[in-house]
Amino acid sequence: MFSEIIYFYLLFFSIIGAALGIILAPRMYFACLSMFLLVCLSSLLYLSLDAIYIAVFQFILCGIFLSVYIFLLLKKIGRLNLNLKLVAVPKVIVSCLFTLILGAVTYLYFKEEFTNSLFEIFNFVTIKSSDVVDFKLHIFPLILVILLVFISLTVIRVFLLRQQAVETLSEVVSSKDSEEDENV
Amino acid sequence: MYSQFNQILNIGLMHYLVLALILFLIGLCGVLISRNLLRIVMSLFIMTVAIVINFLAFGCYCDSSLDNANITCIFALLVSVIQTIIALVILYKIYQANEYLDSEKIKDKEK
Image 1 (tube, rainbow over the protein chains, first blue to last red):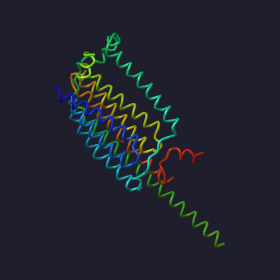
Image 2: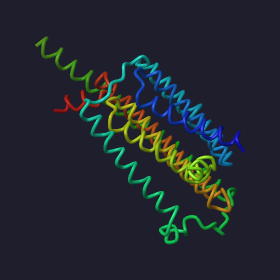
Image 3: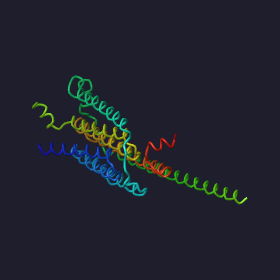
Image 4: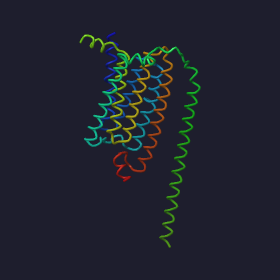
């Protein structure tokens, strides 16, 4: 009982800390590290919600694939040690105020909805659903989606490469033209 | 006082919803206050994590089968990762064109 409570609150504050680490990190590598931590800690939180598939899925897709991809991209462009800046102070204050007001309103809404009469109106949300969806039935459409994603990524990549080739060709042609003009 | 303390100790749906709300707000705040485009993309990812926690909490506490929530979350995560990767590709192109990823500098250049 107590270990569950300690586990939850430890994850609660660690996840919030990692998220704050991303938006307030002074250097880029620190933000990357915070993102990796956020992915790992949220995967642990999913385990406490009995969602093992999602935990493994997120850890592999985001923790191993996405974080490493961002890290390698930053290393490639040499911006791993980039100094990160925030917007001007008045903008930060206004943004924080806006976020706080939104948070307060949403929290009040949650509290009203799940504690008193409003709960009766919206109880269709919390009534246990009788429909049972078989996970295996959704594997085929999921594979289709993944295939479509890879196809679209390949098309985008090919399109970008062709565009780059056209740009370099036009640059070469224009430089040759200018050289010929100079010779004339 | 005792009931409030008891409420804090009994981990339930509300606790997960509050965590998701705080994460979503941190992500929103990050989108609003960051100047670096890559950090804005990371903030969007925080918001996605908040949404997934929300779905899973409802799935765990309010649904007889967790599969509904699992399927929704897998699709949400997949879409989020694809969105991040496409954003990264676009950012890489922006970096190649401008040599920086600062949103305010890009805005100034456009003017």
